[in-house]
Image (cartoon, rainbow, N blue to C red; front, side, top):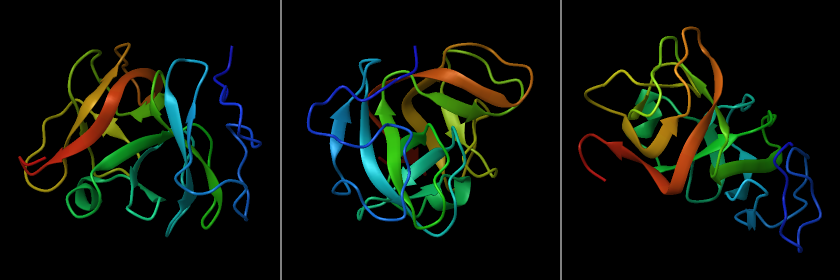
Length: 163
């Protein structure tokens, strides 16, 4: 069964995107997979389906990279549908979202930002960017693909050795 919003006060579907806000940005909802999602606006570029995104203080999102992870908000979410530039939609915060992972990524190990926008990997990095705490893949993969991940409450980017 597809993940869906179970909160009573919400009128937009989990995969719906719009060029005008249908909810207040920052609205949190509960999901059928036991997770949560937040209503956001795509910032400077489109967001791809299953991309890991940084959530800025104004609830705008950008696909995470090693570069921007070290310079922006350390909040992270996971787009379950594409969101065009300047459009509004939901990103999953916790639960069992699908996430784009790099080739040969192992399961149940720490994940890190990469130079590829929206993609996480199990390869340790140094310098800017960092570990995405509270997120692990549920299965090992041999090719780059979106896989179900296990995301605990309160995932964040642990950048440059500081939280």
